[in-house]
Amino acid sequence: MFREKMDIRLPGPTPVPPQVTRAILETMNAPYMDYRNEEFRRVVSDTVKRLKSVFRTEGDILLLAGSGTSALQTAMVNVIGPGDTVIVAVMGFFGEYLADIAKQAGANLVRIDSEWGQPTDPEAIRDALRQHPDAKAVFVTHCETSTSVVNDLKAIGDVVKGSGALLLVDAVSSVGAIELNMDEWGIDIVAAGCQKGLMTPPGLGVVAVNERAWDVIEKSPRPSFYFDLMRYKEFIQTGQTPYTPNVAMVKGLAAAIDLLEEEGLDNTFRRHVVLRDMTRAAMKALGVPCLVEDDAHASPVVTTVIIDQADPHVFRNHVRSELRVALAAGLGKLKDKTVRIAHMGYTDAGDVLKTIAAVEVGLRRVGYAVELGAGVAAAQRVWLERQAVAHV
Ligand SMILES: *Cc1c(COP(=O)(O)O)cnc(C)c1O
Image 1 (spheres, rainbow, N blue to C red):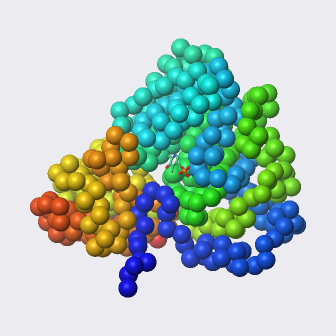
Image 2 (tube, rainbow, N blue to C red):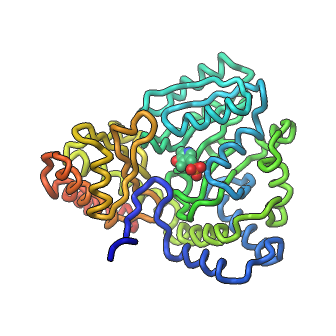
Image 3 (tube, protein in one colour):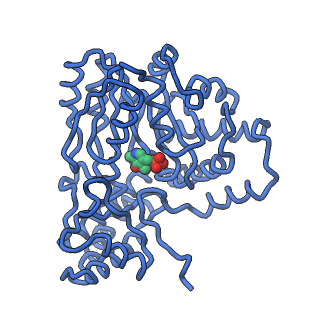
């Protein structure tokens, strides 16, 4: 009977609100539109305009038909060419993506490695910029979804501002869920996807670009035809994309932005922080360590927990098959040591309480002597104290 039932507690893709699914299905059920018509152009223009408030930028927003990685690559290859120096901050699995993209683009890669579970030290970026004054860009991850660490982008922005380099940010797992002030923090390009904080099924890459970045992009060789941002810039003026857009997902994204506006973005950010605090309090009560010890760097959207007294894959399978809650496996070198519990996007306190109850059962199944209900109670206490803040 429950074959198709599953609570998605993955840090992407995230649960899709019914309003978003409906908007997508309505689009797919109707005769497929010519996407250069007046009506769809208005949808694109309106969506892009409202996304500027989500990214908190006066810059341009460009939509790609692709996943989050298409946006990351676009950010990189429009600025960096063979022989150019780029500073990449790596603090986990997704930071390695940025390093790989830079390498493949033929860049002179300068890595700043942080221990997995720690954020990037802004002073390390300052040093790298001093040693490599020719660096064209600094690329950092906002929320490192493998370790559940959030970088202090405001502090990093302050460091990069005075240099000649652009600041590029991977915000695939943070946009729409974790505070991100693109203009105020001096971020020149933000790359994101739609299937995480933006609550839409996969299929859209989103790139935000400011004037400072356009000046560099214009003069860059831009070897990629499909990802050439100048083409996207030209077409977006009239609500179009240069190539066929992902029409249904654009409509879904528009419906998701309705929901973010309805909740109020600051309330959305606060809700995620409360859900994180519930999850972390529960793990503490259960004696299951979180990879990130310091609350100040702990991600509001995902919590990486260390499962070292049993096989984390067996644990995850129990939670999934018995209680139908999907948790994410660890990534990279954390693959066989951690499990990731997402509280990202269309997720509320009830979802978190059920997840923790399921985690307790799973832990008992693999031999942990946890006290049943201890995690749930700790999370409930956080909720009772903080509900007024969460506005849910
Ligand atoms: C999910 C994720 C990506 C990759 O996005 P895709 O949509 O799978 O291409 C990149 N960076 C971060 C931080 C992510 O969380």
